[in-house]
Image 1 (cartoon, rainbow, N blue to C red):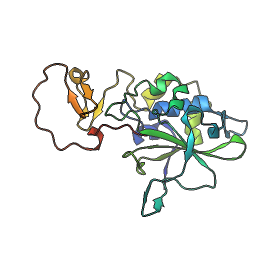
Image 2 (image 1 turned 90 degrees about the horizontal axis):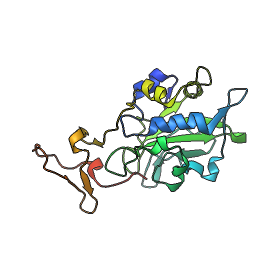
Image 3 (image 1 turned 30 degrees about the horizontal axis):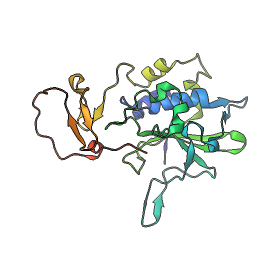
Length: 230
């Protein structure tokens, strides 16, 4: 079962798309305001056909992971095709507003782990909207996968209330709007260490100047490997 988020309080409690530099909340705001409209029956209608690949949309096979030719599904199947968007590594994603990708660092952090998935009904209607995140390069995290209700999308786009700006939305969703912090497996990087350069070939961090002595680190984890989520 995938939990459904119905209001801003539930979205905030889910912690989806946080903390910075994650882009999932900005992706959701863009989708609600720029990709869909609500018709007279409050049905979600896509402005663009996801089959065309605009903004980086591409088919999603609804596979969480596969082992021995057996694949586990991430989402409940409703008979409609799924499409995924949010991979900032794709060239097509450059057509999104800059605010969606402004914190994409191409470094060892979480700035490209979030995704939005839709199921498309007939006549360009959007049947379901989901958000999820990668737990590694190949698998999505089922625990942190949510269905976004039509009511919540209407709130985000201001359809049922006063217009909501991006900054107001992020504040209500618990996302800091100040300078983003790089994320490591030990937490938020201190301000004085944010200028640290990445030695891509060696995979090590090369500080531009002497740094304070720190305790020995444990064996490197997944997010310390040089990689970009695809």
